[in-house]
Length: 305
Image (tube, rainbow, N blue to C red; front, side, top):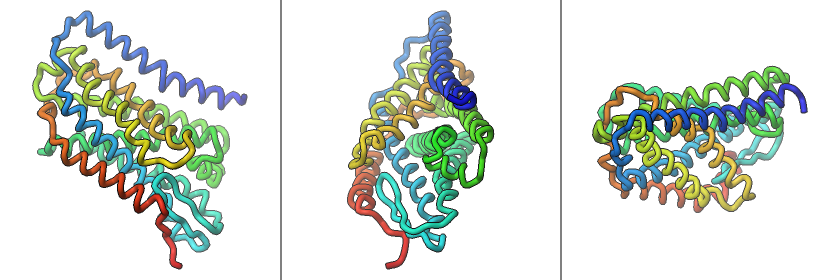
């Protein structure tokens, strides 16, 4: 194994597993020493709403990614792309096809960073809108950044093909992957405060233990349960393709948000634990699932007959 690849794999293990685990253990120790308030972590109805919004945001982000993989190809002479519910394909050939394999990750990262910026500015949003923007920020960033790491390791992946087109050497690929790994905890830490601001009362975030419980119920458990609900959007396809993307998106960021929640100070609750209605997110999820399976699954060609 090349030295650069070994370094990257070690960095992945440290970033995704060791570092958030260590931070979480430090939070558990801090919570015990602080004798934090015993307030529950928010309503289960809110957790259910958060789960549904996560499922919707994940699949909407995936649709944006595939759409922006298709659109540049549709505008390229010689390429005939088709959009599906869990992938895209194209006929014909063009040197630019490999480059355009990176436009999907670029689009989702742009959406994620935009939503992250919106979260940083106080706005008179309803709880449902705030929750949607939070999960779009999360899914946009954590659907894109792992692809840079995978691209450095696998030239046949989407971003890997774009890196090959750009003639990036091993050093440049490893460097880009390390930058992406470094951004993951930074973005997750930025999302800790908006997550805690979903609380309805100061008691919910009064101490390290209370903050960790709130994130567990409103963010971590909804993401875990939502990962299972994403599967119907992606079948039929090979099991590894069905599961890999949802698991990567969840595992690369949620542990950091959970582990870092205890460190956030001076949280201003925004009333989010007064749970939004489940009807709207449920209708949105069902509608998007029908669109994926009835419209996208047969394929939408982005070219003339």
